[in-house]
Length: 139
Image 1: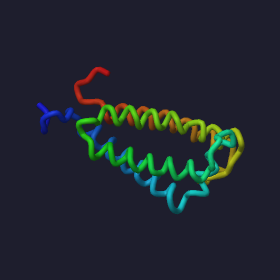
Image 2: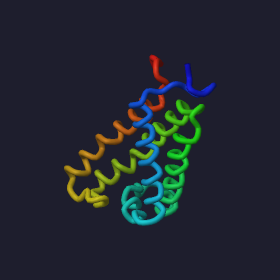
Image 3: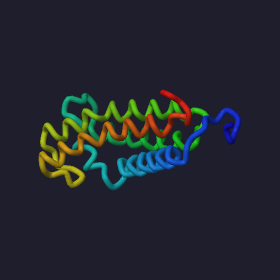
Image 4: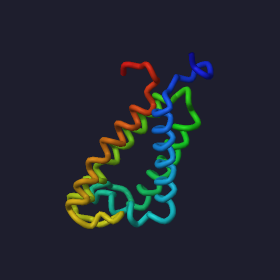
């Protein structure tokens, strides 16, 4: 039985994962807007037909909103998790561009470090899906 009507059940581990993911998104989003804008601009591929700073600001606002939604919309947990996962997939080309174009940012100043970072994005996608899947669900 759910603690609140209409709110999907969750396990303590998934709840912790969801809170950690939400906190990370909000932190990253705020950093997009303030102290790390230059670093994030290094991840905007040259082929994006928009101003790099505008992309960084927009993605920062999106991250803050997604992190907040993970916490504030428990009835929509699964849907928000899918949107967060899709967001992580959508921004992956920026990580690829940083690696392929050898752009230093966030202390990633070697090809090896930038390459290793690529493997963390699928983990974020998996965390978004897993932490928002109701307990007892087979999907």
